[in-house]
Length: 186
Image (cartoon, rainbow, N blue to C red):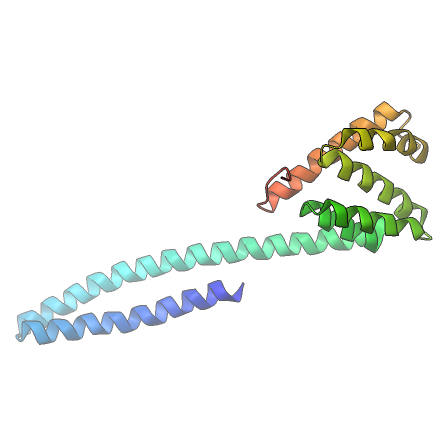
């Protein structure tokens, strides 16, 4: 993050040094007042062009830095919410799932099975089902649907659970895409 800002500052500083160099070269080559005047005018034109270019570069770099900061803040807010809602093991599982580490996600979700919090335990089962569906292991995913229907009072049937898993997997893919990752794992 600071690298982009540092590069922008460095560009501006080095640009100023180059502008002084152009003026000095104009004085030496011209050797007359006209030459000095031409060099200064050219230096001013280049200075303006470089300043515009440096400003555009700086604006581009600052915009990128702002996007990175916004992404990081969004990640931190999401993680904070997830910790409260589904617990640390499942939060880790979600992070791993977003990064396409299905094995790590399943292991973390299974650790949530030892939680004293029922919501954390249930969330782990949902995450395992999403992992299976996301990696296109539909037979394993189908094994979770009856269990999910039994866990969740809003999900009456295995078919309802399957639709929820499909929707959650789509949300997972959208999340990956919002972070600049591929929607689907390879």
